[in-house]
Length: 120
Picture 1 (cartoon, helix red, strand yellow):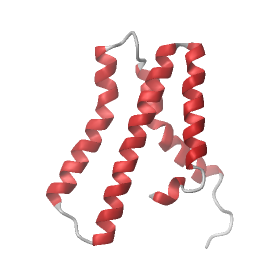
Picture 2 (tube, rainbow, N blue to C red):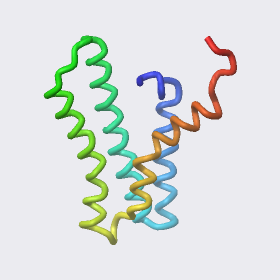
Picture 3 (cartoon, rainbow, N blue to C red):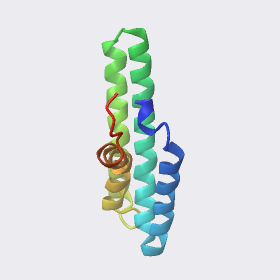
Picture 4 (spheres, rainbow, N blue to C red):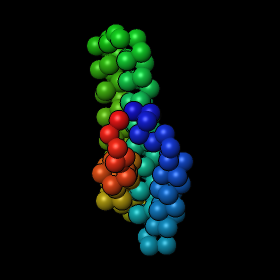
């Protein structure tokens, strides 16, 4: 999982923040939704990365801890939608969804279009 963004992680984050800042000029609620979704997606992926690294290093999987981490990660994905329902004038739901999917879209683009041509 760490390999996914190893080379371009800061570039991808900076590009996402620039997109979020650029959306201020279109509509401020788009910007807030996108940045909120992107931040929570980053947190989701970092928790997933830490858990998988630890579980694979120990070669032992605890069901209780694994279930708790699974539930907490998915609660992170629900937070933007709850905030959209509470504050619909300040946060756009479509921008929040795009923010949540931003890193996944970057992963797909990286491996579909910029993969190595020589198999190792």
